[in-house]
Amino acid sequence: MESIDFSHLFQGISTLLTSDPVIIFSRIFLMLLGMLLVYLGKKGVLEPLLMIPMGLGMAAINAGVLFMPDGTQGNLFVDPLITDPNQLVDVLQIDFLQPIYTFTFSNGLIACFVFMGIGVLLDVSYVLQRPFLSMFLALCGELGTFLTIPIAMLFGLTLREGASIAMVGGADGPMVLFTSLSLAKHLFVPITVVAYLYLGLTYGGYPYLIRLMVPKRLRGIDMAAINKEKNKHKKKPRPISSGEKLAFAVVVCTILCLLFPVAAPLFFSLFLGVAIRESGLKHVIDFVSGPLLYGSTLFLGLLLGVLCEAHLILDPKILLLLVLGIISLLLSGIGGILGGYIMYFITGGKFNPVIGIAAVSCVPTTAKVAQKEVSKVNPSAMILPEAIGANISGVITTAIIAGIYITLIPFFK
Image (cartoon, rainbow, N blue to C red; front, side, top):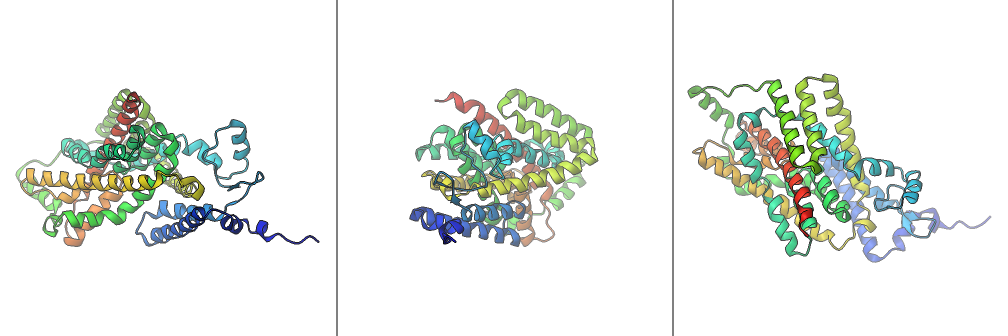
């Protein structure tokens, strides 16, 4: 009987010990980070639906590295960089997540599914009742999306690369995925991973920004009480019918697709969700808001996790992308709160500035963060309707900006 070669029996350990020190450190760090994300997801500090599969995938992909037949190191999860059609056919039969990555992730389909699910959850009533207020806050909440581009270019990124990472400031994962896929495909994997990692962190980070920028006495402003007082002196806003909301979805979707055809799949997916909701198609609503949305988010998290393989993300630009991503989200949060302050002064103190951060369109996370921080100061205060309105406007505005970037930036050499 031949002796057993333990280096080939436990290949995950063997590939780790025979790698460069940088790879060894990176794999161990990413395994530990993955475990941490699962823990933080379980505790509710980060979004569990996304972070638990992402964290477990991150740990598994960096542990499950083996020696391939040609002597190189690889895995049996996914090969995101494969381009040769013949190799792809072989890989589709071996790597178990490759079909999902190739046919849903790398072409933006999974982003469209998530956006459709978000559309079904959106009530556009507040946007239609107060369109100018909602869109003003949404534009303020895009500050990072605009300002990060020149900052990125100062650090040596191209305009396309800068626009792709700047979209992180819109706090809308599908938009980042779609934009980077269109403008900077070579950085598609790291930018998308950075985006979703930071979007999970907004739930833990933005409360501190709110506390830093908005004093307690302003955080406690109760919009429900203010609106009740207003309604005593003037007529209540007219309720928006489902027919009007459906017409809004159809008209706006058509106009945006006409203006920005390259982002038409995203516009279509979002407003199809809104149209399904307002048409009262109960069984379809249940499917899109349930199995489709949650299933797509699950596989999105899994794929993001397995794309965090040490060999893959050790690009010299990764650290820069990490820094720019957090700058973009920080600037957008600051811009949203500043927009809230502007409305506070315009209305003579009858607007809670915290609402502004909900314009950073991480639906519905930033709206929930805003309400939670207000409730800590004044448990009876209610700002959620206004926050959701800003949230929805932020989604639409982020989609428009993505369409503008994807359409115009290729014209600049």
